[in-house]
Image (cartoon, rainbow, N blue to C red):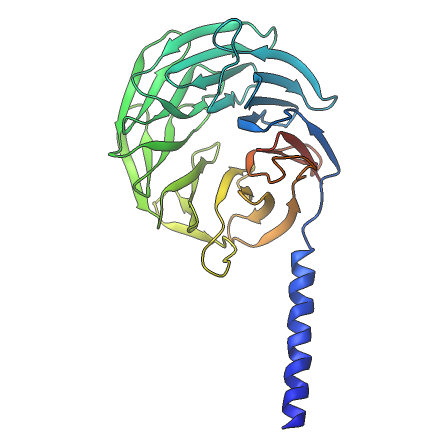
Length: 327
């Protein structure tokens, strides 16, 4: 009996040590910078992480050069007022950016900071993504639709009816394919030239984020406190089930995800501030970081923007207003 107890205690100590090592395996940022003092509603990073667009809780929108942490422009929808941007995006080309507040949408030129178009929408905007040069935007709305919108000339090109609020969208740079995630746990892939639905899948809770690879070959979606998957858009089959790090009673929510240009890697961010680099084909974790929490409130940080940088460098923005450079 004594030997059994001794062995059990030894095994318990080993398990506890292993868990402690795993919990400490996440690396810290090599550099951080504060872009908002009271936190953010929204944020996005340029394709290479060179620029950031943030929607501050107190001071509206601002566009930053990340290498020197320089605020280039301050953007708001009404003069003399600070806008509350619930969604923002930088076009893949980096030449245009968009800010969305309630039912208003503004396209901005990132070279000079000037507005290039102001539009209103039929429903409140919950999410927005631009095509390659900012010609079109896919909007997720609270009226149970997503709208494919000509953001330079005006006009709705396609109305995609989902049957629930669309909280997450993404679009390929060429504007061929779009993906939506809604409050009824549905993920849909759309042909934006015809408005026809190509694939539909269901997760086990309301969709928190979606992503589509630049070439339209892969799709990702995650559910709040639920599961997360990668699908092939060649045949619609599930490719990988992503481990969402089961806690005692629930899973962790992935709040943001992007594919690498070669589709080999997936960079994910969670509401608990963890950033993970994954292998797309297997779901295997390659590297893990914890974003800066800050000393003042809000001390927690949900990851709301991600980017693959150059030379194995990555960028993440937390909802607490901090830019994180990761290596």
